[in-house]
Length: 177
Image (cartoon, rainbow, N blue to C red; front, top):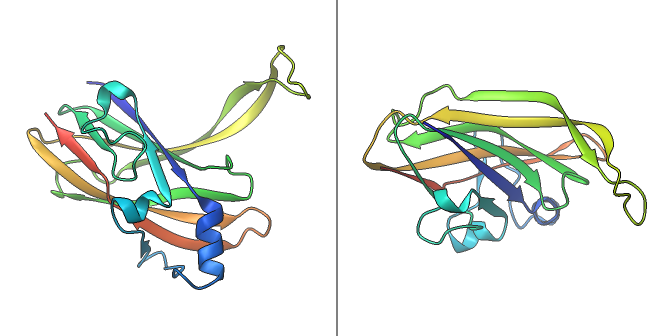
């Protein structure tokens, strides 16, 4: 049993701009805006995982397909392409088909961790210690020999005002051996 880390990057600037100009709806917590699938959701979302876990050449796609075994855990983390500078997304809900393929409720965790970064311009090669807030969502695969289609829902927040920009969702896959 292993943990498969999946990193999700969202184009927060594009979503914020399209909500502001009315080209997409902001949705609500109970009815998030569906970003579509494949090519249409690729405009907003990119997912990556360790290459050894990715199926069907989907690395970087919004419809990332990962290969897993029963008992493996999947740990999702989400950020924006600008590293949460102007907007911050966070995952708040998920659903799975089949519904009993992953344990529910999922485990939502948010905690502090140290990060070491080079500061200055150019960056110093001596790292400086910072406190970083890390949020993840984890689920354990309970069934084997199937393909799990699932939806992930996230809130996008404007970091300058603290206001919610919108609620969004899309649907990647897990191939279970």
